[in-house]
Image (tube, rainbow, N blue to C red):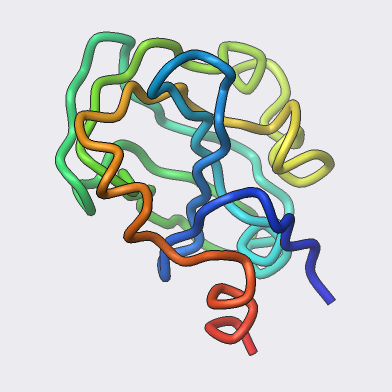
Length: 128
């Protein structure tokens, strides 16, 4: 069974939002379930800080041994930081998806959108 932390919000496309401590800023990455389905992550293409994305707009790609997948912005927002550690070690997405394997920090435009995302029980039901 995949790890689904109860304090995060989720999309049906397997991204998560985790509060980064700063007001309206969240870590974004893929869930433990998603990394397990993809297999060993070998490369990530991520945007630059300062880039803005709308909800469900593709912000990057993740390449694993099994597949290449798009990464979707869970909400409208602007990227304030990109996890540069993933350039040297993309496997952090596999070993620590909710910690060191985060991908971007996103300054959310509207907190109401965050509340509209799946809670852990809804995501758990979604992945079965």
